[in-house]
Length: 55
Image (cartoon, rainbow, N blue to C red; front, top):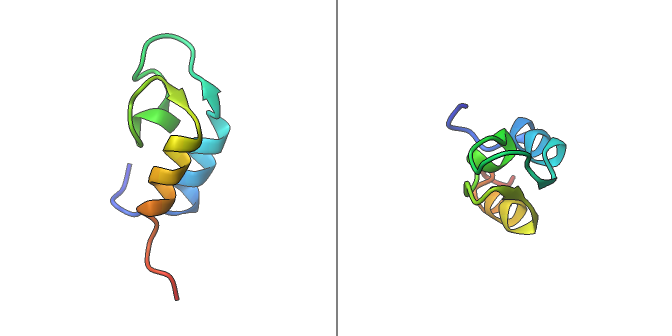
């Protein structure tokens, strides 16, 4: 994981979209965002809120 929120993070989130198998923390798309055990619209909003500067 790097310190920049970018397309790589979005792709990871979309790849893991929906409930993650196993325990919370088993899903990279969720761990990077809020760690609640699923990847959903809340993670997407959080990711987009942290997106880099708009030009």
